[in-house]
Length: 437
Ligand SMILES: Cc1ncc(COP(=O)(O)O)c(C=O)c1O
Image 1 (cartoon, protein in one colour):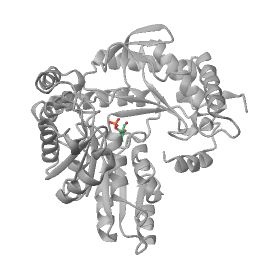
Image 2 (cartoon, helix red, strand yellow):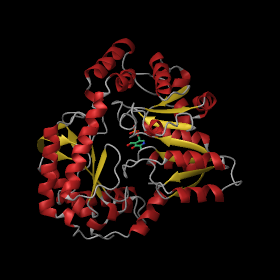
Image 3 (cartoon, rainbow, N blue to C red):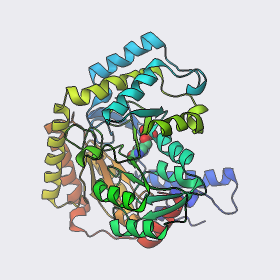
């Protein structure tokens, strides 16, 4: 085993030749300790404050007070909105705290039906179904709809849950947002499969950019393919009324399967799928994760309030975009590379896993809590610090953040691009494809 842990990633511990379960776990533990010894391990840090723009974080026994929180996809701040919290409390008073059976056999409550009706209406559609998480909404829906006679054509940037859903069918990918390559895939696969489904995100969680939905819809229609889109990061953020990428292009009726999560803008937990009434009926009885698993607890009735608030309190989205633009201008002004962000996700490219980890560590010292994203989520050369902006961040917090980045850059010279790229991007991309990242 190579003991230079700095050059390894999670992937190297997935399937270790010749080692049993305990030996593998021991090796992985050594790897974590090595990273931790350099203060480069920042996963599973403990928030003592919930999802706040200003929070206390505990890490390795050290308390970091009043950090600017940039790790929450709570874009409009609804996790702590008094009306959303009140709705959860009232629902718990009425229904108790659990659903206690899967929806098919007793655990289908009136608040479940209300959420389904409301989220369908939110997208100007007729029918929806909820799942326990956004991850399940994607993986379970695709798994139920596409079989070995079918083909899934995925943008390479889609979320891991879509890749998981496509494991039981045939699968090809096209480079992110590359319409020529999508068209080639559609053309070449014509006549070979029973159903073909193009699978995209609305906003891409790592690239932070937006699907070319108008072109994709046209291609799908032309080549007779279905279209599924997960806009987990677009809802509440994109479109005049916060309906996401589907509103931006005014294509409400053109996407066959819309999926999403209640864990980001809606401030809670759970997933949804929106489709024709017949497809929803089919999923209600054919989707294993729906019929064999309990779904949303009564606290989830708070989602009914957060859906309303998107229309009732549009100023949250305006404030969010003020923050996004303020931060983007500041960081670009300092010379940082933010990729092609078009959303509330702001990536700062560092291009090197160790530099990435060091930047994250220094940011924390300066009172800024952000996520490091590296291989295998993105190739090593595209390592980045990812920040999710919230409407509830204050201008003072944005300034604290900009000052922290200035301080980090003076030490690590990220904007001078003097970092060493130690990644083999092509090989990594192939591996990421195999893993379904
Ligand atoms: C694009 C996208 N889809 C789906 C999910 C999964 O949603 P959840 O965390 O609610 O299961 C995520 C989560 O990060 C995501 O980024």
